[in-house]
Length: 118
Length: 504
Image: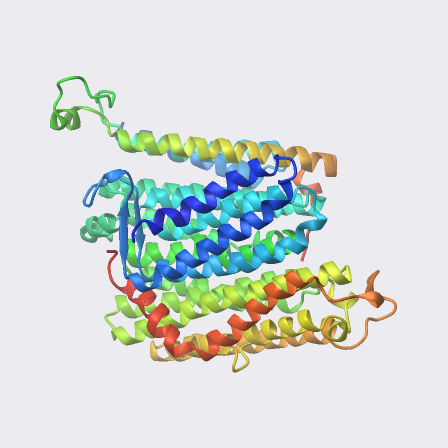
């Protein structure tokens, strides 16, 4: 069980990578990048998880040592929030670029968007 | 004096947002470029002020030493060298942009993105913890994706999208590496990760993290075989941004981060050294072979960036190999001096060449070498500076490129890699050949009647601001070569020692 869940995160990562590498449609490539991003975020949360751990909110009167012994690791959750916000900015930029590319080339097909060469 | 460190990051980021506000105030809208130049100038002065101060560290939010949570800014010799390089190139690029960007609509948008990128790069080289490094790599990268597509022409958007896709894959792998290192060691602070990783440095988890980090960062540094985005992205950007991307971004977010991770976090071992040397050699050789056949001036320069960064990574790899193999410390120091000196020199001469290509493109209306010609008489200042840059990158004495390549070649022989040294000499000759072509077609002779660009007969010298930016960089190229010994004692020696020691 312990290893399987990490393997699932890896599988999600590979799905994202496959979409980016193999798909021609810009929208599918963007979705692939999002899946890739989510896979890493998922792994980041899993790293901080402990089976049966409490939510990382310190109850009144709870000592720091007691809190550390019971709760899940809050640091990866803070990191994931930052990473999600970065992903949001990237997604906005990607979609804006896709719209502009469609205006210029009239297609979402990457194999037809090939004016650069050499 | 530690108060300087957050200022180096906060000032450009703050002014970037200030620029957006000022641009919408009536009658003040034209001041944005002046504001940006002032911000970068102050930053350069602050970066120079850190030089005499020795290693510094600052804990944001009062977390204090020994905690794994707080954000820490570390400024050692290597950070000081990178800060100076970034802000020097940024200053010349933004001065050049003052005249160059007039043909674009909304230059304030350019100024804001430019400051965002500069501030984020300053933060990358000051970051003392892995996650902070990742965040600012991303901020710099997002600003650069937008800047590559700034002109919104079809080719520029295409280049920007390709760059964005590959850059995002690189970032995802960097974050994956950081995640695995955190799960193995329980720390994010680079110095603490380094300490905690020593007992388990050969374990599969650490090797997986290292592979993800090295792959992601090699993609950011455009090392062969991860280089496909660079020859599209760098030429498509406006000239000042090409100068920033080739001059400092691939160094700050690629090579600097690679060096930090390998030397100060993972600790140099023989496998890492071999990976760095393989990446460096492949980039150096393949980059120059791809460059020789190019007729587009900016594309040719972009391929040379891959090749020249190969020298730097090769020298870093040789230093890691000497350190890991228990070799003499002074040989490792010599390798690092050569590599870091070449990094600085490449920033100077490649920015100079990209800026002069922008100046030529604006005045002559073309950047195809076959459509140019006779510019030496029509654009004397630009041509003179372009020649200085070409001689520097080709490794002709007494310019700076000659000295750094010579040191790298000597250091490679001393480190026991005579074959790689011979390859480095061969690549230097090919580079010379390629830049003789640039001289011959762009600056000498006459434009051919049948292939000449639209404005070939009536070309005039570029505006004064652009010439000033070119002259500053040309002077740096000449002086850095002549002042090699004092620079080694003050700047490059401490930077190399920072890599060979542990983080403060």
